[in-house]
Structures are given as structure tokens and as C-alpha cells.
Length: 115
Image (cartoon, rainbow, N blue to C red; front, side, top):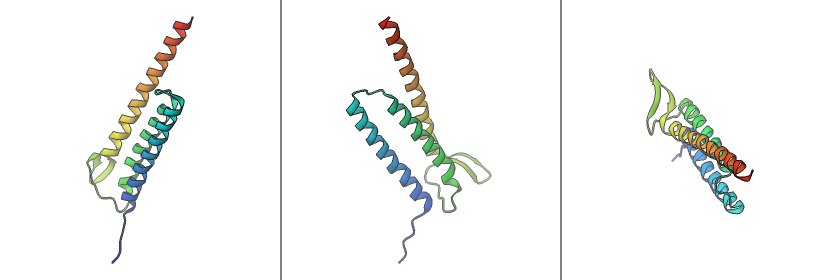
């Protein structure tokens, strides 16, 4: 009896486990610094978004790839993006852009109030 684990499933599992580890570390940093909207949350959400988009681009090109969710962009049986990971990455990047705008607004408001 042989047990074969596909490379694409392994890569998806690694990305998922890495996400949980990074989110756990972000929660620990937020608890230690008592700043819920800090730059660490901004950087980690941007990094995770990029990681998910890269995963959505790389995984369909692996030889043992099997579609488990849906295709976002596909041309003539060639999958460009895997939809699930691409949308998660896009949402995380949009979240980080909104968080950055919120941090800039709060910083400007504090500077105006302190004058």
C-alpha cells in the first residue's frame, strides 16, 4: 500500500498552517502592545494577501493539481488563477489598504488635536 500526497495539496496545507501561525503571532503582539490597530496588523494582512495571491497563481501550474474550488480566470483548459485563494488574497490586500487609510486619518486627527 502506497500513500501519495500531492504537492499542490501540501502547498495549500502549508499556506493554511502558515496563516494560522502568523495570525497567532499578530494576536500575541496586539495583546502585548495594547494597540489593536498597529502597523504589525497592516504588514501581516498585506503579506498574507500577497501569499494567497501567489499561491493562487502557482498551485494551478503544478503537475498534480486537482481543482477543488472554482476557477477565477481560465483560458482554453489552462487555469490562470484558482479562485478561492485569489479572492482571499484580494480581500486581505483591500483590508490592509483600508486599515492603512484609517491609520493615516487617525494620525492626522491626533496631530490636529495636539496643536
